[in-house]
Structures are given as structure tokens and as C-alpha cells.
Amino acid sequence: MPIRAKDIVPLNQVRARLTELAEEVTAGNEKIITRNGQSYVALIDAQRLDHYHQLEREHIHLALLDEAEKGWNDVEGGRTVSVAQLRSKYRRK
Image (cartoon, rainbow, N blue to C red; front, top):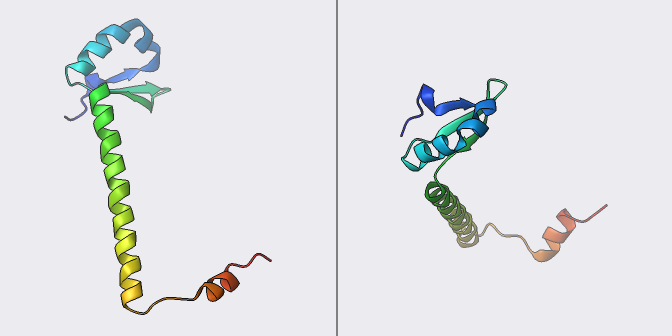
């Protein structure tokens, strides 16, 4: 859902309107809280936050799988180094 102008709320108004804002958020209208005219924090539904965290975990898993595939391709392609070579390359000085 796109953010509209009425979904941008100055921080100094949040305390007085928190219940009203929370009701709007649970109805699907996320809010951007501003401080000194700049984006500060967002007010979103707790279920949506859980969903965002799940997406982030899935993205991390996909990135790890991609790195594992690249490593496997290096092994299959013979692009490897011995442990001794690796240790000498990263030896502390």
C-alpha cells in the first residue's frame, strides 16, 4: 500500500494521537513518523513486521545458498588453494 501525505505524522503529534494512529495502522495504513521534518521511524502492524523479518531471513538463506553454489563451482573448476597457502596469505604480521 502506498504511503500518502496523511500517513506522515510529526513526532510531536504521535503521543496525543497514538491510539488513533494504532487503529489506522491495524486497518492497513502504515505511518511514517518524522522528526525535524525528516523520516524518523515507521509505525506498522505487528504481523507485517513479522512478515518483513521472515522475508529478511529467507533472503539471508538464499544469499548463503548462492555463496555455497559459487564455492562448489570453484571446487569443480579446480579453483582451490591448500590450507598452507591460505594460512600464509592471511598470516598475522
